[in-house]
Image 1 (cartoon, one colour):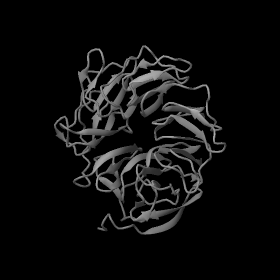
Image 2 (cartoon, one colour):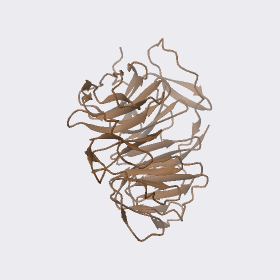
Image 3 (tube, one colour):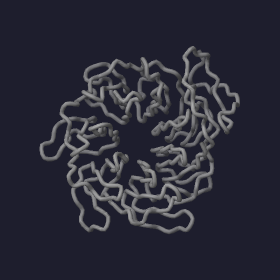
Image 4 (cartoon, rainbow, N blue to C red):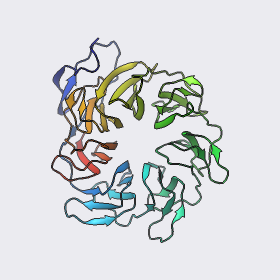
Length: 398
């Protein structure tokens, strides 16, 4: 078996309308489903608005792009105009123009931001929230729900005692993860790292109570392809006492540990990011260097693994392609600066790899891949000679 640290052999094939460099793995008897052809991605960034601090979260609606992070201003890369925005901003999805009337604010960083059922759900370091056109800060302990217009829902009372880093809404619940220990403000309940709250009002769902090993951390959450499970990634040795090294699945219904046991990839590795398709769970890992591993959704065996020389902090799957981001400069020994794309069925490196500017650390923190643009956020300073710090998009042609 070829050692994983060696760069794979490559051949050039055509997928859809774009040539890709594909790693040639050992033959596999596993049948793959038919794939939508991968689209063409421009390696030249689209000039638009950028931020003056890290962007940790990106979500889209049919008409807008919303970003969250640790910034206090957004800057027009074409004109140099600087506009005050406190950790949240919105742009037109079609034109990229700043939505100037959309001005909700938080007092500290937004780490997670999702759009669901006509609302936005934010999580992060913040403890206060301010509505557009308001001069009043109101308490919002690490969680907030607000309209697409930016107005907070005052009937929703979700809160934690420390930051929320991941949010997965599904059904009547919102699943959350982060370095918190208690959920709720009036009568806080101990539910460290991982919890479910009621979508309707933000209160803790006390029937869903999985826990990771003492001292463990949950860094990544994803809804399973069948929507019957939540995939949990982080740095832990057990879930509810069952051996699960840094990765496992729990029931969306009652939180019970499911019989899916992916093997640990190395002693000091831990899972920092996740992505899902119909057949696989993709795990981005940190630790000594970094890596990305594709595990089969059925059984948990490894389909392929690739090594990076820095943490893989962001993953996103689209049309047979896995986009990966982090603070690496190489993937399997091949130069790839902070952003790379892989063929999802075998981990082969694609040719799309814009040259993000040094320094490599902290790198890319979030990728939002849609069939109009691949949008990327993080702590980077630019792409090549283009000074588009912290937020950038690349045109995608299906």
